[in-house]
Amino acid sequence: MYDVVVIGAGPAGVNAAMRAAGLGARTALITSGEFGGMAANNGTVPVRTLAHAARLLREARELHRYGIVGSQPQLDYARLLGRATEVVADVRAHSAWRADVDRLGVALFERAGNVCFVDAHTVEAAGGRRLEASKFVICTGGTSRQLNVPGFDRTVTPGDALGLRAVPESMLVIGAGATGAQVASIFNAFGSRIQLFQTAARIIPTEDEEVSAAVAAAFRDLGIVIHEEFGEIESFEKTSNGVRMIYAKDGARKSADAALAVVAAGWVVDAATLNLKALGVNTDSRGYVEVNDYLQTSVPHIFAAGDVNGGAMLVPQAIQEGYIAGTNAVRGSTMPIGREVRPIGSFTDPEYAQVGLTEAKARAAAHDVVVVKIPFDTTTRTIIDGQTIGFCKLVVDKRTSCILGCHIVGERAVDVIQIVAVAITGGMSVDELARIPFSFPTYAGVIGRAAYRAARELGHDVGWARIH
Image 1 (tube, rainbow, N blue to C red):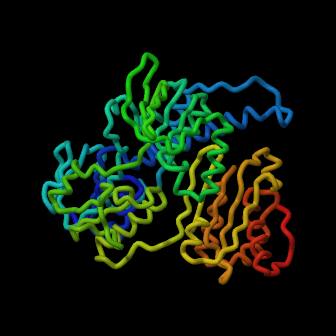
Image 2: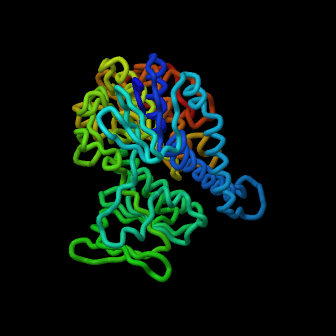
Image 3: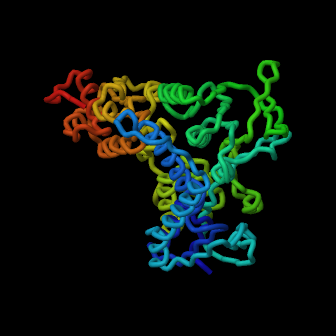
């Protein structure tokens, strides 16, 4: 019998297992598929590989602007998929986590098939393996949400789309959150005609409103057709060339045709397979496992970390939650989930990223704020590289000079936002950030310029002018 059994070997599960084992618990890690979970095998790693290919295509098409003449590049999608497979295998082979799991003595059971609870202290995998433990940490992630409409079986998931053997001529992408936006952006770069459908008033609705507007404008300039507040889907139908989506709004029925329809309507937990209901593990109205501040479920000896509990659903946050759940499974409920800084971003074209509060949320929380926006077409490095779409927006508290949030659209946005995350975590005032002499010319320099502008608007003297 183990002290702790962790179910799922994605970022949350691996870190939960390592933490539990590091605290001296006899620990097992069991997963239905490959080590690394979706992030390493059919999520973040392969998606980022395809996004990198999309960026290379864009850059190659701009070579003539710099006097480099040659034939236009052509995408060999089969070779790109081969490269993605190589990257996944390389990441898996060189994962420091795998070595740490072995070093810490975690019993690892890969490719075990679906795992379910037999009773409160026993799980069984589809292959027949049974594991007993005093504590469990559920880190099984989620699966693509299905829509209860006729013909839904004629659609594919984002994961299916990224595994296509050829680029479709046209594509309907239903759902314009982070996942849908990435799918639309990548396949648009590969030559598909994209229609992006969003039930809400704007795409990527969790972002700052100006970020959503800027990304939507850039998408439209790139040829993506965006349908916001498009209505309700009535059905999907097979056509001679692919699939047709029938939808209606305000009594008017419409249709859209494409070779492929991708539904990116979010994630759900496979609670039925886990047999959670029989144990009394509660799920919320969205179907995610309910947890308290210690990531403890309604059954005290069972914890849940990562996507399965419906939190941020991002790799860094899954890592953090895995560590916390592993700690609490061994030591008891001693480490609460904090409100740490959580930078997030997406590898669309253009990229977008954020950390901290949006302007709207800052004002709603009764902050009196200074908001500064530096357009990318006014910064030196972006002009040099010809990547002038976007901006950096800084939200600062007037009273304390604290940085409340930062939102970036444009080239290298996901990398640059990390600087602000460090500054917020370190408790730096906007004045202190403005005094850092960033290298010139760099993408990161826009942070110093925004901070300098904010400090000046607050009436503070930071000593020198910004030239980025």
